[in-house]
Amino acid sequence: MCEVFNTNKNENGKMDKETFLRVVKEELPYFEKAAAQNNCDIFSNVDLDNDGFVDFEEFAKMVCCCACASNVDMEEACINMRRNKTDDL
Ligand SMILES: [Ca+2]
Image (tube, rainbow, N blue to C red):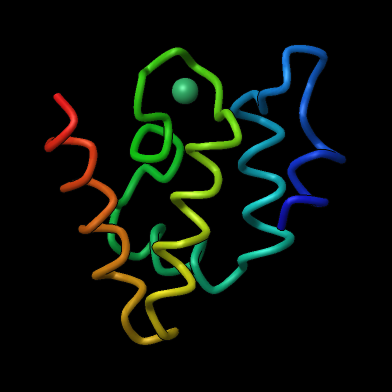
């Protein structure tokens, strides 16, 4: 996953929304599908500091959420991400 991030990050070391969504679709298709089914906006949930980019820390948190959940628990992973974001505010 580090490699995936490093390959796709921009000159600022972050991923823009378009790149991020493409990477999720390619690398975590089941997650993308679950999010779409639940009207879960992956990008805005992962972009914890709302700067419009996903940095490595945010990316790693998303990967952890996915890794902790099995395929059937993807809906819960989405909800947990949202909860993490709310806790940070
Ligand atoms: Ca961000």
